[in-house]
Length: 440
Image (cartoon, rainbow, N blue to C red):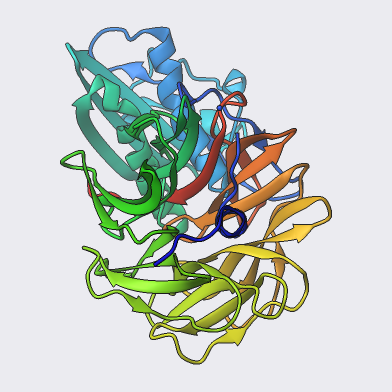
């Protein structure tokens, strides 16, 4: 069996991924871009008060800001400016009988989210209470305890509860995103909180480590690495911090996508002059070839019911979006409105497929129904936007944006169009994958 030529490998790589450009250190404050004219629920979120003694001012403000950022990015809420609040948060308690509802409704608030915290060494306890101001009642109360360095996770969990209580939508504020980050000697794999905070390097070996993809249970990440010179497929066990090579055929073993039940992985592989979609068991056994038509087939994405796989093929001359049965039969083309498609990703409810398509000088992200209808243009900003991945609740997309040759990761609210850059502008981050909801 011969290795594919360097030219062919470059062609396959160009279809599979975006090779970009430079190190995740610490996520800086993200930029928020919001469309106008969308009505939001007005919520007051005072600074956090000390439950026993005083808190550092920076912590008082941080606790309120994390909750506000989460709820505002949901697209349903707008935090009222604290400068308008009539109540002194430092002296007012959290219980309903200790404050005046009129102090909040008179400034236009519909909901009130009060927080208190206490520090005991390296442990923090945070209490939060959510009030319906017009109903004049508490609708949610929670006390959470954890390490001080876990405080953002505690707050994200409460924001999830608040969002669910008011809107019925499941929050994803405590989920994680994985991506590639350019580093010395290659690319490393990182995990970030959904908002870009708390970045941690999970794969680093002075080689190219590419296209990470979460397992459905959030315990593993499949990725391609040049650790052994060839682009082989590895699986990272996050709990044990160990990697295992599961596919090492000479040539390409990349763009992995886990089946919904986590038992199989679809991927792109080369054999001789052919580049096709394959499926194998999660340990690399029982490898099956699914596509056999002329041309390159790359970028598989399972439907959430496990019955179909979306992919990209240039069998008609240009890279187009196709869907086939999970066994490789009944292939059908979905895209007819462009010359170059990439990175299909099925939504969690199975209703839509996100993808990248060449639009002018770069790519934009779009979605379509699973039958190819109702095409929606998602990204409408400078730069080239690629590699979309859905949040577990289907309300957001994460994708990479390249401007002036520098790639960053953005998340975007599909309903409102709000978007945030979650990686610093001097960090070359690419190929994001949004992980599943984590167990508390």
